[in-house]
Length: 244
Image (tube, rainbow, N blue to C red; front, side, top):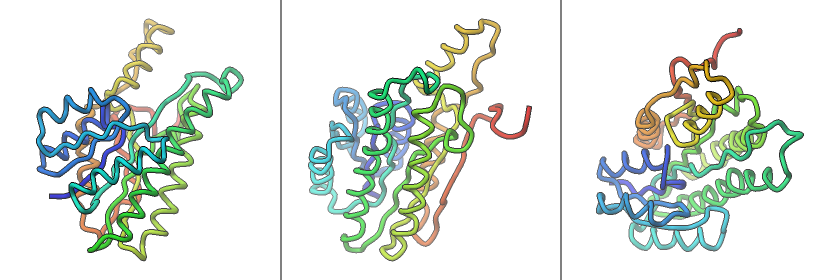
């Protein structure tokens, strides 16, 4: 059994992945702001630990990690997932406060979680562990009106590359999963917007969020001598590759 923390565990990819870990018999710390939604998961899984906290609050995150580690004694895996899309608009229509909010969650929040995990994995005995950052296809091929989200996910790719290098001496593996159009509330909201703008549109091609979760599970199950630096998993009909 591994000890795992999942941020953004209350919905979407985070929730699906947390449930996949729990079904495999792992001890999973569930981090998100909505404690009631985390409790829904814990009712079904005895190895779930509810940790309601805002990922941007450094002190509260430290307390959440400490609570989990008091129960487990170590941290094997962090799925660094919590994120926000922000306003769907071109840059000239984005308020700076909205931009700051996206960076606060997607960059600061993920930095804090990675820092706490790295510190624990470096010092524990036996040392080491795995950090999996949730990137996005937006770090490679953005969609229109996604400037806040896209900027933040390019930053996460930088975080991943730095942690891959810095973690080697301490048996800490870091990789990134870039997920395209898993059926989450965020993607369904985008689909609704596209269809409202063009009723004839077929909308976004999507895939089951459980397929994304299985991909994270594969990365987490690898021995520490192996790593997946970057994995892309996406709806097969997405226009990600090729030219039009």
